[in-house]
Amino acid sequence: MNETIHTDGNHCAVLSVQDAPPIKAVEKPSWDTVFTTSVADCGEALVPLSLAPERYLVRPAYHAAGIPGALSECYARDGVRKRLLIAQDLLPSNLRLIILDTWRSVEVQTSLFTQCKASLKRVHSGLDDEALENMTSRFVALPSLDERRPSPHVTGGAVDLALATTDGSPLWFGASFDYPGPVSYTRHFEELLEQGETLDVRENEALHNRRLLHHVMLQAGFVNYHGEWWHYEYGTQRWAYIKGLDEAKYSVSKPNLNPFESFAQA
Image 1 (cartoon, rainbow, N blue to C red):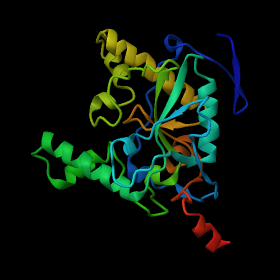
Image 2 (image 1 turned 180 degrees about the vertical axis):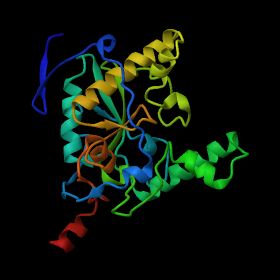
Image 3 (image 1 turned 90 degrees about the vertical axis):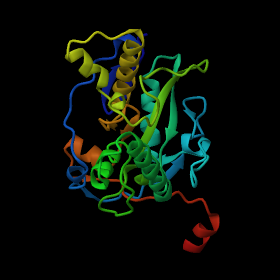
């Protein structure tokens, strides 16, 4: 394919799965480091993502799983929406982004943190509560409505996603969405190669699928959370820190689902 796309002033060719570049090693900032970045919310609206089904698909994973409070729609900041369209245009024509989760309430964030912590406790029963919380926070951010330290998904600037073919076949990434283990780390298979190991067919498939998703999302302006192959951010404190910016532009947000609230605020 020889299509060319404009992204932030650059020309980026559409790549096949096999042509996507390796995922480079990056700094892995702690939450405390990320939260040193200041925030000045730009006031950008949260918008529904399901209005462009001909471009990418929206499949709210937590609503499907019956998580209390999870919505049947994925809402994100408009800047996220625009950049998802760019990422989609960078994919081969037979692939589509599958949006699994974006904005979530602090109630949903709390539920996910509690469930993940309980699952990890069953496997790591010898850990004390502090160690268990630290391990859990590698996979689920601590629930927070603090405008100076918001959970990324609460800002509307985080997106969890995968890829599927246009005929409905999901691509394999080596670990299921939300699996709390080292195999979910974005560079897991890159590190195996760096250690001199040989990947089997399925591992090699996952390696190249991760590379492609990572490539198109970074070209579109997102940053990845190193602990989850599916998690990308734009406008958040992590994004600003990795980009070397002075401040993030998204803080705590909430979609306006009640028209009477809008009327009362007018």
